[in-house]
Length: 283
Image (tube, rainbow, N blue to C red; front, top):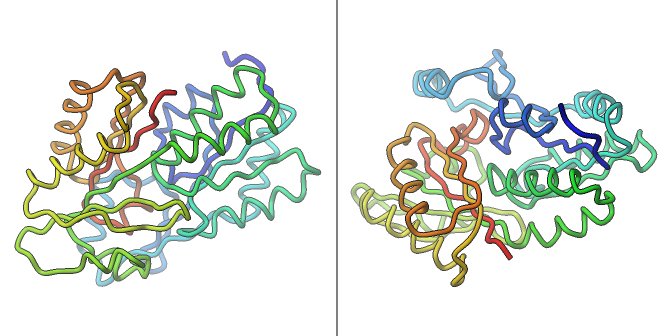
């Protein structure tokens, strides 16, 4: 049973936190939606295999949509029954309108709901959510926790490896990543999320082996000589790559937490087959 906290923690499904982990840590998750034509599913309803089977058979890419203001209001009402305040942490405002919907909903609650833009997504966001849970368990005030999260946000980093830019290109979220467009055989592309919360190019690599080696080099650069930290490795139909990265990270670093997770339908709709590493160096 959860102990009483100074605030409840809310996020959205693009943080890719598994339902079991969310329940264990007392995190409220508001789902986005993924739609194939007129058929819509809450993020997480379809298994990854089911989602990719549908996407590969569909005449056009599925669309995604942010939660409604009402969905956030309902979640905040439930969360405020368990704690005096809420911190609500969400996918970058540069990638989704989710933060705006959360802020509109928060206006109903007289300052008790604090919305925080992670300027990231997937476990680049989830590592911030996990830190908020720690702050809540420590009895930190919402205001102090927001200050702490601002620092955590600067330290949380994520790199994503893509087999193709097709989904990003067709989904209109490619931005600066278009600089990596090319036609090399077996081209693998890595991207990150910049300080403004938008996708930014990292590198083109020829072949899987080179791309995974580069991913680990990038992580090492972000760790900047530090040997201890929390990590998450994600995958969308690329589990074998994720497990190779997990094993390499466990061998290289003093890992305080390691999460291996499946990218959800909403994230995968924009990336296609993908792997990723998120990290939060210890201080």
